Image 1 (spheres, rainbow, N blue to C red):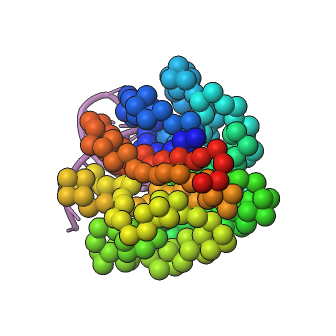
Image 2: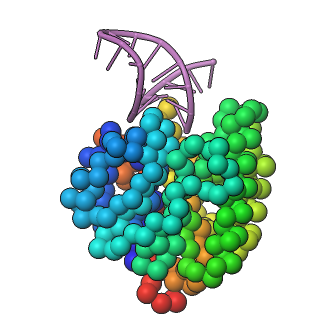
Image 3: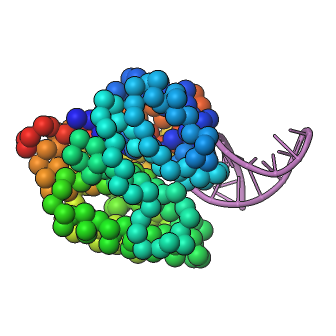
Length: 260
DNA sequence: ATGTCGTTAATATAACGA
């Protein structure tokens, strides 16, 4: 089974690119982030016509997350992280698909720093970490995937020294990611490629893609039972080179039916 | 500091967030 995550940066403006990629890569389950569309403006029919069931949590202008599944039922579990009823951002949606708990997340960016946006990011991280602990304790197979807006290590940044003060790479943010992973999650891409330069995002500025000035900020965290089924993983980097493309590339994993 | 997008206010550009 192939599971993918893709920050589309505007689901309606990106629809031709999204449909082209869905047809080309044919993932079974897809997590989308940055829909940038209100609930009623999500292109549901186009997604269904492409062969996918879908649930989504929209928001006008910003954020927004969705889970797609081909030939599989999507049983929604929740559409927000617990822990802050005041939080109006559409950044998390969770469902059970094929017996797997799929958490689709769009972690706050946190810039500029210092300031309230970094504080919100760190609070959101704490809520995610608390929720993730419960998911691990459930013993169910769980994948937590999406745009984490964190480069976990220097290997994940084209020029680390330039990013030390940025909210995507500040020490406390990297530590928050490490605290989460250290609960017992597997960073799927890094497990299969421990020493490779892997990027999932290239800024629109300064020909970043052409220079391969990228960042690895979209991640797959796997619970132990899924870790044992991890067969392959990758980034559909070429999609970042298409016309009218997102600043992120799709990332995917392949799970075997049983432990590998 | 700069650069470029998508979105939304409004119907032309400029803001905001990333």
